Length: 141
Image 1 (cartoon, rainbow, N blue to C red):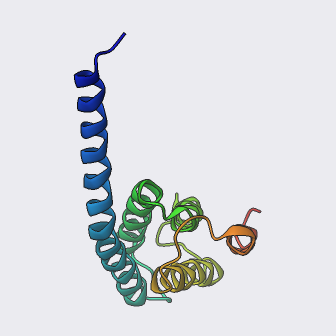
Image 2 (cartoon, rainbow, N blue to C red; image 1 turned 60 degrees about the horizontal axis):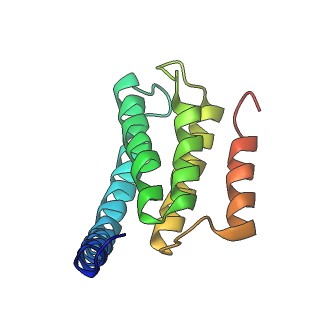
């Protein structure tokens, strides 16, 4: 049986950990905004006539980071959109079709809106519909 000091110590450590996570959530909101802006800027720089593999790889890297981090801070809808974008970008190269670029752009726009609105969580039923509609746009869906 644990003594009161051990229990208090665990409770204190848990409270400190929760406080640290909450502090990081505030910082992550700023990072999320910066990442979404970066995603938009990189996409805006993509030449529709001749998309460079480097730009597509950079888009993939940003989306992959968002996919991995956003959910940890409560932005599950961002994670889902980023996962869909990663699936779309995986294997893309300079031979990306105009249709694929349009679908990538739709993902980027939706991501921008979700981040601008500060949507936390999965967005409920509307969020699920958004993610499904993006996935339905994939070339092989």
